[in-house]
Length: 215
Image (cartoon, rainbow, N blue to C red):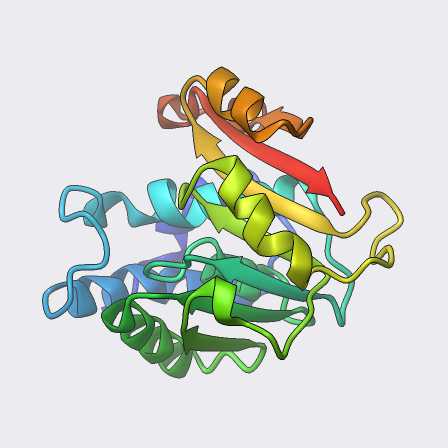
């Protein structure tokens, strides 16, 4: 049984522009992931009951900062169970998302979610990001996958150099938590940083951040 619309309030309190079709897809996510998580564990069992907050809304933090024009191409590096790529694909139906992960069972779940939701703007591929040679993208996104220096090393060769949006140049957008001082120092990069707690007031988002590095 799908979640009732009022149970999506954790999303609609922050995003008021989603269509009924988008909200329906968000509502189906918890059921779909719960069923697949029983077969293939891609989400922590302690988090599956709070999927909308800790995975869906968390992923949508990127949408609180960035607006991707239709036709933008985005790669999700180390997508795991499909985050942040799947929620962002629902939020931006005119944007093409390519989700990659080196773990085959995770991509299998992602492909099933894409099929269940009939998402036409998403592809998923079982591969290491270092092995991608045939595609270029406007943005790379990632959620707590690897140190910043590695994410930049992997994503920079895949990024187109032209500007896709008026506000931001093409680049890497990643989500991280905790004290990032040492990680940023080791990367020798100067990312722009947003506190997710400035957008979402739930306590779980304290000390969680979006980092952006233009190409």
